[in-house]
Image (cartoon, rainbow, N blue to C red):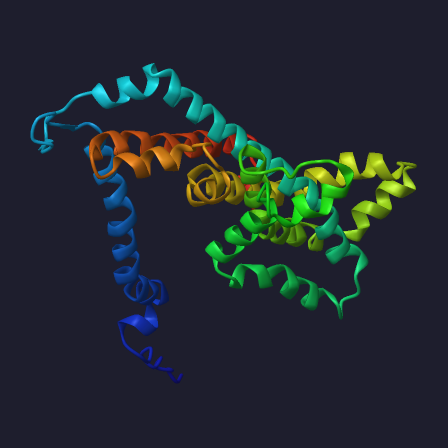
Length: 291
């Protein structure tokens, strides 16, 4: 009886343990990202509990809740928070209403040959500078010399001017691609068999959309809403350019970070907490598990 000796596995430790090799490759960059993001968040939360000496302006590194008390007891700051959340929710809803028909056409109506071109057209605005797009809308919305004011002048109607309307329109334009692309991916993964089965059971178009399509693309809608809501919540440049005297959370942070850094940090914690609450609420629906 002959015996067969097995050759020892070739390669080193990394060859025999691909997971260890992956950890070795990603360990350094992931550690750096963790330090940057989690470290900066930790510094933000820590600074929010400090205060500033009213005479010298120096940081006083003693624990205090004074900044959060000011934030949640000052009516002006509460109104800024409510306004910012309202703008973020409105922008998210508008992006969704615009993205669903566009994404449906791209995924279900347009031919396969045209779909890459349509995706490229949606991505093209993202290549332009954020400031260029915001100032373009400033030129559109200007109450005296804006394009919209010139267009409606013969009707005796004034231009929209700067304010909440300008902020909502500009943010909707800026973040719309971030909603279209996830919803387009959701429609692309929609199985034709589900639609055929719904039609065979006698469901009309709206019933099929409401009972079959929406539950299947809901995770994609959630993914898009996370982008549009969080980006709108933290924006402050758009409010400066087209908002007139309207302030958002980011504007308050910007105005205070030089003279009162702890208060600015406490105010900056608010959008972080709002986004975390939103993510927790979304997770309870199970949508994040299906992304």
